[in-house]
Image 1 (spheres, each protein chain N blue to C red):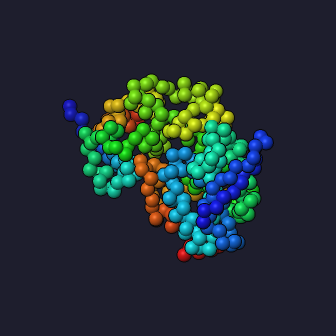
Image 2: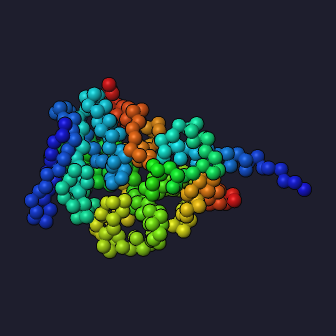
Image 3: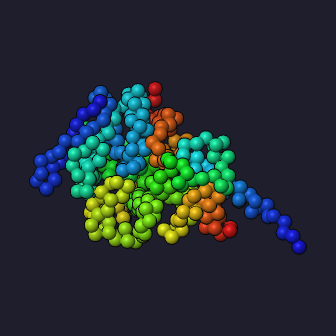
Length: 98
Length: 229
């Protein structure tokens, strides 16, 4: 028996991606179209010189506010911050949708 | 436009001179601006002054004093306290004959309660500390050091802490752990969403947004019964 993708889940997933891309656009001062082009392997921390520890901390704090999650010290690692895909996977897991 | 003011002397020391940016034409409405703090102060400085320019065009005076220990101030930041900053802002309000207050982000924590006005995207002490401590932990990890929030909070409470290059004394640190912005009578909060764009403090690099400055200035001008130019 195959599972038909749940429409609600797909809509939630799209909303999460939209929110996360908008947040990155806010932090980096990008146009929404530029942020929309982010792919799973698009580099973040360590790839974009302007994304320093202070900017990343701001991004995580804003993620907490906008997504209603709490990010612990131990959650924050290189893998999660390195790419857009890593950050998305982290947000998904925090929201219990992994 | 660049002037100075004198906060009250503390502990018997001579009062130090502090910098003030002002649009002062002795008009009826005079807005004291309590600036954002630390890293956010840098990111919001241009926005803050752009709002002041627009208020000037709308016939409103505005006065932006430095917090002692910040920006051009000559006194050490590590000696500053939350109470000290509140009294400094109160003294500035009196010395500069302010009629209103515009507090930006954590500036809301030290806005004089005796003045009507606005808290723009107010920030609480715990959130401010949380963001700065997180930045320090991320930077430490990059350098191969393991630091924890609990460890850093304990150090901050006992002996103060350097966060993002700002040396916060133990006294200020402890006060910030429970400091929440409180709207005094006649004061209202202006949410970031009312400014029609994302908070500029989020930006990795300082930036500006004329539209947001227009909206905040118009909102202030309108609520004091003047129209923005």
